[in-house]
Length: 208
Image (cartoon, rainbow, N blue to C red):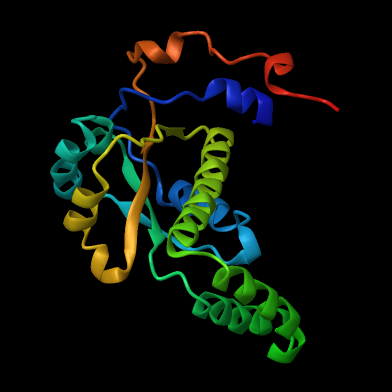
């Protein structure tokens, strides 16, 4: 689907059908999300794919009873790493040297720059930076899903501490940043029939 057509097609689904995404659809969407850009290429987050109906129903009360959490095909939980330090750079250098067939020494300049940036941040700044990268991945996922005609509903209204507790994320040095049910809209969802409301280009874009 053409990108503009896809973005006009998508909306935040309030009522999902009982349709289950195929494994191919899920894998393709996750691969598109994996390819998202991030600052220094570090991707300081994990994506949890929750298909268990029982687990999703446990999470509903902690998302202000938003039923999309349990009625969708799958629930994606974007969890940001809380252990932000220079070891992230070492992980990336090791991976990059293998992928590119380059010696770690050839990446020393990059490593020094990235480590300097991380060391120059306070703990709060590191958390904010990591969350920003997580939202970049979410945005890319939403567009990719629309082009695949997969419905989504990004949700920021939930209790992160409760999600972390139920999913055991603290022990994995992760924290829930944003969640997104995915699947297929129910034809009876009235919100799918409304005209899309967005400010026009002249309101949003400032040319200088």
